[in-house]
Image 1 (spheres, rainbow, N blue to C red):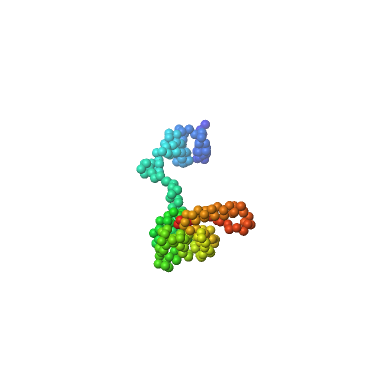
Image 2 (tube, one colour):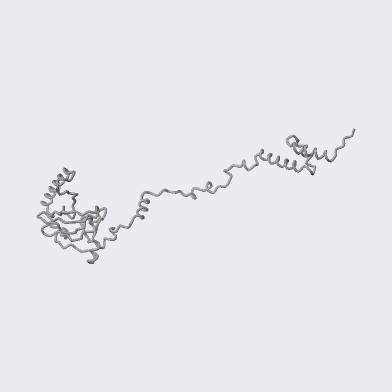
Length: 246
């Protein structure tokens, strides 16, 4: 009995081969690949060759990452730059740039100061007041007229004050409130605390300054025992020495 395969049967056979790729052997694929109607099987063979490369280690996924050029990793020590954090001194200088300009800076006031004041002011951390306007209107720095204590005292040791001049680079002299055997009391404006105060200046005599310290101790004792400020006494704020005067 002779079996004849029609064109329809041949196409069915090829269709079955194409849909059973997992069961076709490599030999059959080569044989079927000769047929012009097996384009899908040819594609399968090409895919199979790629999987062969993957198994042999030639795929890009198996490349060592250290073999890839890296400009940052491959730098030599001389090419590397180290980012240093700013020092505290640099931070302080940067902060100073943001601060408002100080109207009482030494650079702005030195030309209005006497030679004595230019040395004296270096002992102070901050200048709260300086009569720059008065001195500028009078032609600049003026030399004291006294005969003692760098020109600031008279023969009796009294301090020769000038209205609107400074005391301790902080208090502005406004006017005289009183005068006695120990010295003089002046009304001043405290430019640090922004209040009006009375400043008593003891004469530049050793005995008087010693007695002045006794007065300071008594006033401090009275103040410390009047916390509620109900005793109606003169309350001292502080004391200091300025140009050999208490």
